[in-house]
Image 1 (spheres, rainbow, N blue to C red):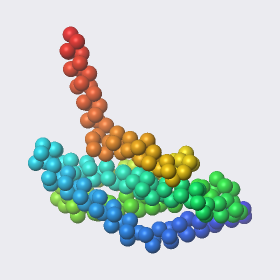
Image 2 (cartoon, rainbow, N blue to C red; image 1 turned 45 degrees about the vertical axis):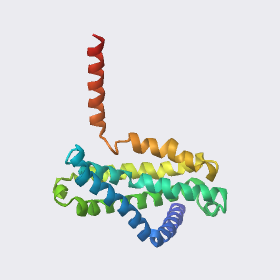
Image 3 (cartoon, rainbow, N blue to C red; image 1 turned 90 degrees about the vertical axis):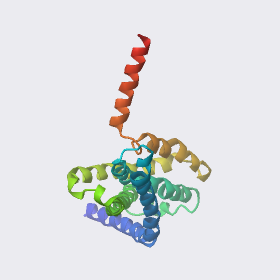
Image 4 (tube, one colour; image 1 turned 135 degrees about the horizontal axis):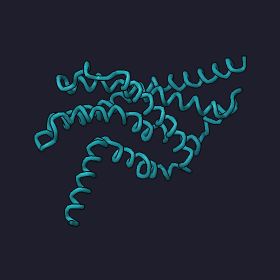
Length: 213
């Protein structure tokens, strides 16, 4: 019975957060849509005239789907948590409920996972509208896509709590972007694949060895 009670409390905490998120959903979607549309259109239709691969728009869309949760985490969730820790401490109410503290935090993380996943999935039809014939929906390996989205957003949901715990106050929020989000975005394969970077490193190493000889 206690497990059922814990589950109901956690479910209610997640439901409350989702109700609040629903009030902001349209604005969130508009903001993400602007980012997706501009990035995809530029990389798919403009940058190829400057020598970029003609299929780079597809790659960029995949990176956007993967990074949707990252930017939502950095722009909103971590800021809200740190602000709450420093100010009203509304989250302290969750710790007074009849569940362990770790379950209260897990409920918050589960809420983050749900919204990150929703936003990531919404990028797929939006990307199809932008790329149209360049984006073949039948070519997607959907089980792998679902697994990737699940793993990525599960990490973001957990990482958000860790970052909020590490940031002492709002004055340090700039460090979140420069020390965590920017390196993950810039080196995480958003603008290049790790396969291509690996081949580049091999080529560079080979050229350096030839020069030494």
